[in-house]
Length: 310
Image (cartoon, rainbow, N blue to C red; front, side, top):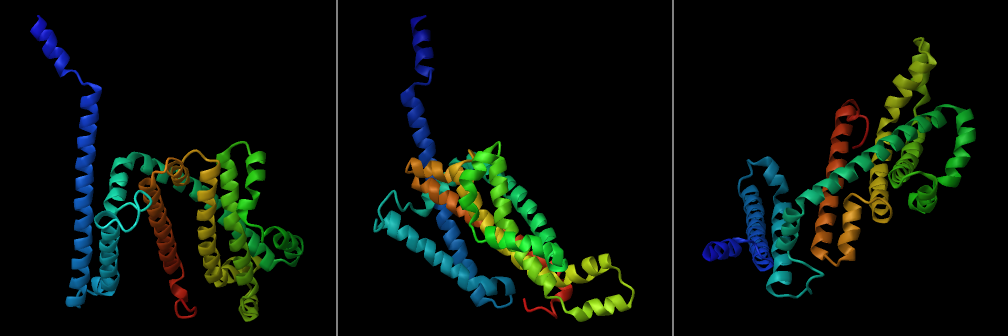
């Protein structure tokens, strides 16, 4: 009986065993992350040299200088941090440490990406819609311009983050306040650029349409708006950059979720690898959204490629 009890007690997990198991798992993850990082560097270098060597691979050939530069950058980063220690740790973690954070905190980072994207999409689309309608109204109607233009000149130059204390006081939740701030940061450039595009349409287009019996609604929807779309997309690009900056500030100061909150948490605990991982994910997210907006513009405005300088 004593031997059985002793065997059962020895098989129970102790804090020391749990710590050793977690340490072994972390070291395994770190080794895998380092291996994956070096394999990624090697793949970038091989792809770059393959693009230089074989010109038939047009896409790789066009990106080959960037691939080689990225491989050299990651190799230099690894050398000055992990190998020679020229940059002090933990302020400048090596690439495999950041990759290890991405693997370990994938659930928390994924939830942060989802929360940030939901907040950004809600505020951005709301601000873009209001800005588009307001810009068309100002550019088309003198009465609307008379009343709205002074308000824009007074409120527009103020950064959206300056309204943050008032927004968090007026709105019932930090989520709704953040949506308002993101919409405000998006709406102003969309309004101004849409207004400029509608007001700058050649009057000859309207004269020809009126000669053919076009109504006011047709002139707005079929003449003014399509001709102003290049300006509208410039406003959308500017609004996306502004909204992303406001998103990060709002999440760091008020919203208890998202990549900005994760960045603030990592900074508070001096977890610099986590902080760099969040920054890289933010960069990829913003770059992906801008690329998607570019493709949407190319698809919607394909008929204007011969008329507008891209």
